[in-house]
Length: 402
Image (cartoon, rainbow, N blue to C red):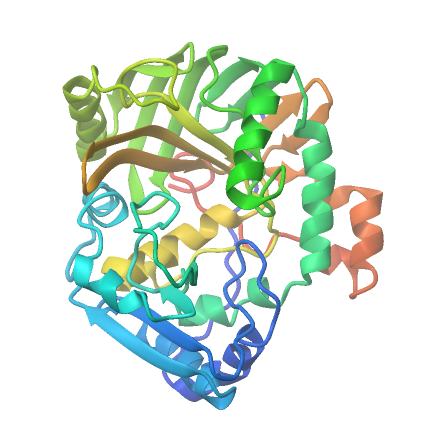
């Protein structure tokens, strides 16, 4: 059996002053936006609105506000109460991620902004954000101070995009998938050209590209997806007891373990078994609805995760799912009320993913990182060995840690 590499976390300084963040903040507000990179070019005279809450990292908001004001923008901030004291992973994902969305008056204020940056946790891709007449640019700002200063935010976008290009070539139009992970995941998938056509058409319609940089997707739901999915990480929540989900024809049919989180899954799968969503082939909120491959070698968690609560706690944990070789998967996508969507995203870290077009991930290592084309592009910016080395190797209980 393959053995996981030992955990690794770089030495990370604690950030205590806005001044420590200002150089990076100035870079972030003057660069071209890219998917899964925090930051966007802010122009003189633009109206920027931060939708903030009391549990987000206020140093991040202050530093970016200062940098935007320096560029001549007009910046306003709405600070909501947030989810103070909230640390339970299951409660976080079911409250902050998919329920209790921003109050309506926030969007009335947003109707005057050119750019809206969300530091109070919400995933606008999954939330019913109203159509705003001013059509502002809206983006999540999912970071805390030490992540803002990490190697991730300084990594050349050209390298990241080349990594994605090489990885995508082994995914796109594949017909067979074998996915295993050292926690116990063991899944097979069969895909058709029709599956790929529908999947890429959806991405083109929503984002204007066939795949998202940093997050290329396999088609889902998939009726020819069977096996066992095992995880101990809720993407937008934190660690959970190991949870085993048995999958038949694209649906979770049985949940074992998981503690409180496993109970949440079982309860909601039963309660909403007759709920029908048009995107899924049948009723229920137990369909596998996302299967994403993450591709960035410099993504990591914040080592200060346990100290944080609410929005900052989410960002300190979830940033790690962007790491190369991570499989990011969701179950459910049922909107059960005007303000509640049942959807949970989870991650596996020591994956092996093989398609009929080649090995995409091997024991947690994204093979694209070792591709000659990627190394050639990396050489333009420095030592490829250093640039393409994963900065962080997660500690997973029972796999490479107690």
